[in-house]
Length: 100
Image 1 (tube, rainbow, N blue to C red):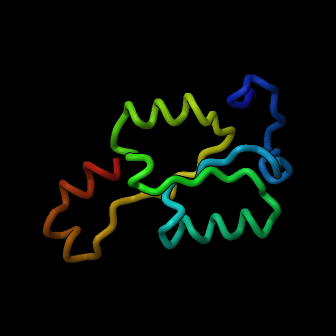
Image 2: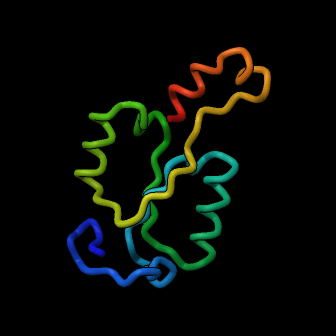
């Protein structure tokens, strides 16, 4: 398997790649912030974090530009539109549309 730079990677080498560029989408949420905290505690030093205002994940052109520029080796997707039970029940199509 090759990484984003074309270099060969050994399967299962994620935890030993402490300096690999890792993009964590949704780093401000409950799950994403816990992931970032654990990565930092584990010694990962090259985390790429973007807020929704910095990178709109629903915009294909913005995402393509981001990936072309940043070239992360790993991507962790913890981003989602959330709103609770009532909001999900009232506007299910809005949540499905954004989260897919």
